[in-house]
Length: 199
Image (cartoon, rainbow, N blue to C red; front, top):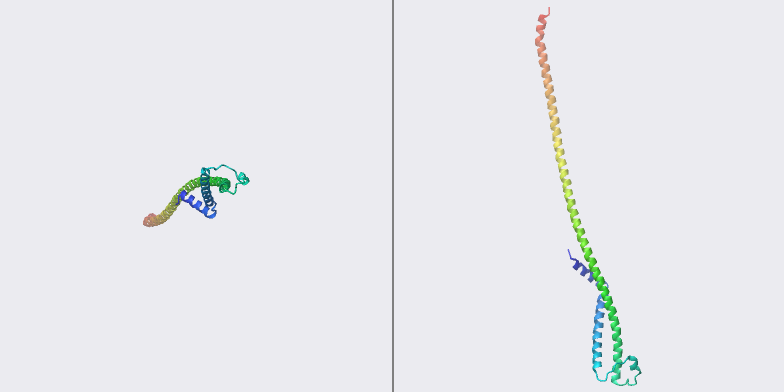
């Protein structure tokens, strides 16, 4: 059974495959960061040059000395600073969106953990119920077998009862015949005596 971490990573990879916005944001952030670092290095280099003053782009555009290389560098620096501001704004927006995605990922991970615990609990309950049902099925099977055995014993007992009743009936009938025969014999034996006594 895969762990919740494997399932979570698989879900993230599946989400990236269908919606690569996260990877694009990370790439854009990296590119912007590289550009910001390059601009900051260029800015530091220009500031360290002798005679460099801080000016705005508008002042440079109104300066009559734009024909000189130093003035052109200052114009380029001003444009670079404006670009840096735009890049920083875009970088901030990208970082905020990335943090939102990370927060969503944390919430998704928490939900996955909760669902994993719930699934494990339900799986345990299902296993317990299966064992209970197997035990009850075994009990029903045992009761069924016992009923069959009791029915067999009852049938045998009824057969023996019927046999004993028949034997008793036969014995009674034989005894009654014997008693009748003995009575008849006694009557016959006594009959001549009765005849002799009669006048």
